[in-house]
Image (cartoon, rainbow, N blue to C red; front, side, top):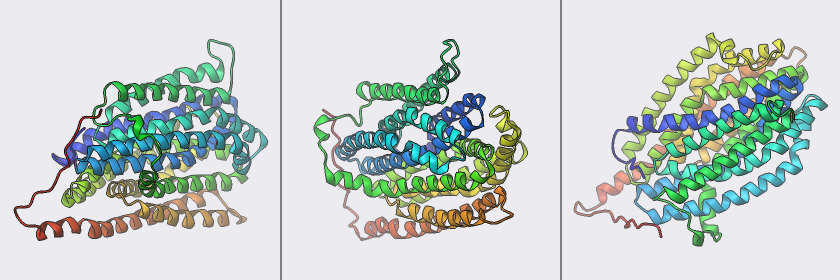
Length: 468
């Protein structure tokens, strides 16, 4: 366990962010590797895998419910030195991860084809996306367990083990993708099914490695089977914090789905270019997101310890660092989009759409960095409802106007992306305003209590016990 209530905040952010970003980039690389090898199968395959991958945002919403709830409650417990509560939250999150994983598998079997029919431009894209989803669903189901274990480590200030596991899983995925998709060395090409299968095998190996770490090396939190009996009160605690954050990812899913829907009138090449562009944009935003995710546990531990000044300082430092990083990558996307997109498709129309998307939507990046930081700070404070409100505002101001614009005779895809710039900026401004209001409400209380408390009083700290 790493105590984040002491020491330099910038140092904590900069030491935690690189392993986090490596872990997240490896996940994005898995998706980009799938798109890269699938690109040889044609436009329908690219569009199908890209649209099917968007369903992962919806599953990520459920993952965020567990991940955010686990990080926030455990970080608060670590900050107030309550090890027993940290272990209880972790073990109840493990139980929920199993239930959510089963739910994901069942939903994938039932809803994959109806979802693809709702967003795809033609029958070939529907078929490719459905096949990919069915083979990719085990990966999504298993990632709930990965999310809970990685979140528990992050709440205690430890990020390197989960990064190493994710990096190794990506290496496995990269090695398997060409073998299973194109039949390299075997002569048995599975096509889009091979892309989903490669990811599922890689995630399964990653779960086994993280499980081994917890069983042999982790000391602060551990698996306690006696705590696996469902406790509805603990589930409510986790879900109260996690559900609004999960709703934020559900909103992202809606925004992405609307994008595929309004672009369907331009054909599969436009959808394929949009899919490649969104994943690449997500990849270059990962460093700023990692900075924000590093700030969350720092804010959480200090909030649990009643140190409001360090919570505020965490927001300021994380915002400045994230903004600087986003400016660098925005300039790169503006002046060298072709370099970033090289190799993802041989179709000129697809690449033209991806390049245009990247140049326009990258103007969102500074505002998006502030959204990331505010969201992580709300998670650290244990109140994620404002995150859901700001995301809902963006959905309403983006999705309905986008669908309306698509009915215009002179509709062009750029109209949707200009709208995206405006609505993302609005969400960033609203997020900052709500966070500052939250600071005034919740960080003033510890200072008031400290003034009212007798000078010789000492806080009662629960004793730390080694797990059985």
